[in-house]
Image 1 (cartoon, chains in turn cyan, yellow):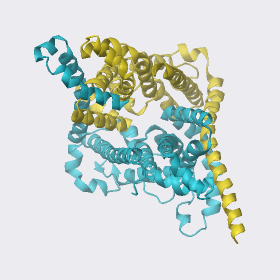
Image 2 (tube, rainbow over the protein chains, first blue to last red):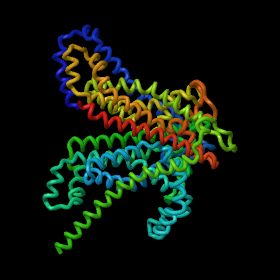
Image 3 (cartoon, one colour):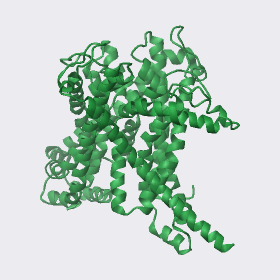
Image 4 (tube, chains in turn green, brown):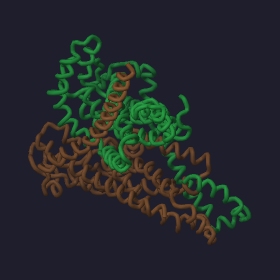
Length: 332
Length: 284
């Protein structure tokens, strides 16, 4: 559709050229242009203000702790000593766990929807998956507390400890005690929340792969799976990577569901069953009770860190997705 | 040897393809699991009191969330009043008036704003509205949700304006209409259905937001008249009640969850169905 718009834009000058500015003003074109421009510029202003407010209001914490903020593992509101390390650690660990579950699951489902399923079934399933993405995060938290946490305590956790508890290297990750809340539970809930994003973006990207690519592979004697896995997926890999970045950005910034199941304890533990904390969770938990300007400022600096992380990831994701959909399969 | 390899390739083919189907089925079944659990647990605890009564003090059982339901509606109304006009106008700018470079900047910023974690939006609204007056308010909650409505509205508005056939545009201009007249009397009405569903989807999305309300609208166990007092909302009530240690509160959290999910899903299914049906009408 954008092509018609651009042709119109090109076609417009010869029409409006002869008109004088006064004439165009009278016709209201310039007024309408200006009015809508102001609202568009408002978005720009709002976003810059957001960055500005985060920067200014975290001044106290930035000037007191400097770079050490990121390497200190103490979080002590009583003595006014704040370090972000446990929260950054928790945010990264939960997101990695989430991706390790969501990426294989999401990619497989996307392959099914784009390569195997008839169009009608594929559309219906995509519709349902879009609905899954619309479920509010506090509902995931609710289900997390009352379903995933008990399951983790009595079923999943004990089994994982039994299987991996004695495997060298892996045993550090699966160490008791297991109370049901912690990094792993948060990772599972996050995985369910981000999988719809991976599926819908990957499906779109996979659908843009030219038909000839598949036909050529099949004609060479490849099985359906070989043509998918060795030809179609590599062609779309940049876009798939983009969908993963998008999901990662979501996972990093997710607040409510994680807050409700991670245990909210600012500790760094290797065990995935241990309680932890994330950046978003600590802001949600402590913002209203932050007494003292330094405390509040430290929390806002955490918000700034979170903003920058998601900003970078979203930017990268967009570039990757656009690159695949336009160029398609440039060897990256 | 070759035959063995062929058997291996064929069975891998069947196995892997089956696995992808299982994965798709697993993800879809999660949706039904969620729905089933909420209907089972929430349906049990849903009662007339839930919609008509205020919360009871801690320790007493019973009571409802009437104030939270009204509070959520009020916050949504505020968000719509503040966010939708900005989103609409900016969408019109991008689709109809925008130059190349500035449009790119606006589009990029909009996507950026869309990707900002909701808790960070909460901090922003807090520093804009709460910090100067030093108390939580319905207005602050409305601002937070309003900001989140903007990027979604912009993108859907632009998309639907662009999908209006070029012939309509050219027809209006050929009749001598000026550009803004074309936009206001031909293009916007043609895209009306799509734009409205886009707005509804945006509102459905922020209706479930909890994080930006925690320290802007805060919460309230009573009615909240006007705009300057803390106000209760369904998502925040679900959160507070779910992490509290009382069984009766858990019961009510499930009920609230069912009501919220019901509203969000009905809005989503309704608008999406309307959209897909309107799809054929749009391309006429």
